[in-house]
Image (cartoon, rainbow over all chains, first blue to last red; front, side, top):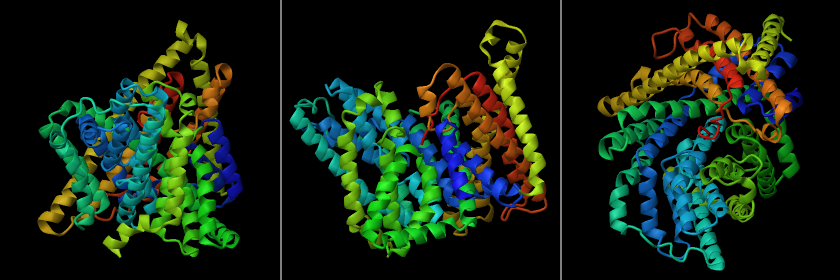
Length: 425
Length: 202
C-alpha cells in the first residue's frame, strides 16, 4: 500500500499537479483502496494537522516578514551591512551575504529573503559590473540562510513532526548560519580577486554609525523576538505574534513607510503564502498518519539501523539521499513525511535530535538552489531577469561550498550543539 | 474499501469528470468570439470574482483575529501572569479558517506550489491536457474534502472546543466551505490562467 501511495504521488508530481493536492490525493487513494477506514478520517486528519499551536508561528512569521519588507527594512539593512563589509574588493557580494544573514533573523523563509534582499542587491551588483547570472546565483545561495538562522519555518515543521524542542532547534541554527556565511564571504572575496571584479565596491557607502542608526529598529527586532524566547518569556508562537505587532508599530508609526491602507494587500499576500504552506502541511500530515498506521516508520527505521549500523555512515547516506530529494521535492512536504522516519533511525544510532534536525534543514535548504526544482533559483532568476541555465555557470561552486559546510556540520556536532547545550542543558 | 466510502466517491468522480468536461468546453479557443461558450466562461469568472473575494476577506479577518488573540495572550500573561484559556484555542481555530479559505484564494491565483517541469516543457494541446489533469485532481480532492468535511461537521456538532464555549462544528466547517469556494477558484484559474506561484512561495 505505501508503494502504491508513493507511486500515485510521484506520478502526480510529474504531471505538475500541485504538491499539496498530489500528496492529499495519494493518501485518499491509499485510505479508500487499501484500508477499511471511512474517509471522514481524512477530513479529521486535515483538521488535526493544522490544529497545533506551534504551527501558528508560521503564518505569523510570514506576516511579520512581509510587514517588515514593506516598511523599508531591507534597504536599511543593506546600508548597514555595506557600512561594515562594503569597503574591500568584493565588498558588494559580501554585503549581499551579510544582509541575508541579518534578514534571516527576521524572516523564516528563504524565498522571502531572496525577494526582499535580491530586489536591492541584484541591481546594485549589476551596476557595479558583476555578471547578472553571478549576482542571481549568489543571491539565491545566500538567501538559504533565511531558513537556517532562526526564526525558521522548516525548523518549526521538524520540531512539530518529531517532538523536538523548537527553541533548541532555533538556537542551534546560529552556528551553521555563521559557518555558511563565513564560507560564502570567503568564497566571493577570493572569486573577486581572481576575476578582478568589484574594485570600487566601497563607493557611496554610509558611515557605520549613520547606517546603524537608520537600521536600528530593524536590528532590534530579532533581539526582541529571540530575547523573548530565550529569556523564557514567550513561546516561539507568542514571539511570532510579538514580531507582527512590532513590525506594524515600526512600519506605521516609526518609519512611517507603511500606510494603513497598504495593510490589506499585505495581509492577503500573507494569507496566500500561509495557505499554500499550511495546505501542504495538512496533506502531508494525513499522508504521514497513514504511513504510521501501517507501521512504516518503525520498519524503515529498523532497516536503516541494520543497514548502516554506524552513525557516520548513516549521516553520509542521509545527506546524499536528502540532496537528491531536495532536487525534486518541496521542503515542507519532505520534512513532514521523512523527518519522523529518518529521525527515529538517527536516534537509535545515538545521533542528537537537534543536531540531526539542523542537518536536515541545512540539506533541504540546499535543495532550494539545486535544479530542476529550486525555489530560490526561480525567485532569483525572476528578480534578476535572467535564466537558471545562465546561472548554472556559477552555481556548482556555490552548491559545492554549501555541501562542504554541510559535511563539516554533520561530522563536527559541536558547531551546532554548543549554543543549545550552553542555554538549555 | 469501506462501504460508506463507495457512494460519495462515485459521486465525486462523476461530478469531477462533468466539471472538467464543462471547463474544457467553456475554455475552448472559440470561446472568446461569443456564443454559449463565452457566456458560460464569463459566468464562471463572474461567480469566481465574488466567491474568491469573499474567501479572501474572511481569511484576512481570520488572520487579524488570530493576531489579536495571540497578542492578547502575551499581554494577559504579562499583566495577570495567568494565560487566558480561550486565546490559544481561538488562534488555532482562526488559523484553520484562514488556511482553508486561503486555499481558495491561492488556487485562483495559481499560487499552489507544483513541480511544474512538465508544464513548462510542453505547449499547445499537450500543455492543456496537463492543465486539465491538474484540474481534475484538484477538484477530486476538494470533492472529498467537501463531502467528508461536511460529514465531520455533523459528527462533531455536539462537542465543544476546549477553552471556547462554541461547538467544534464551527471550526470544522472551514474545510467543506473552503473546499466549495476553492472549486470555483480552481475552475476560474483553468479558464483564465494566472501564475503567482513564486510571489507567494515560502
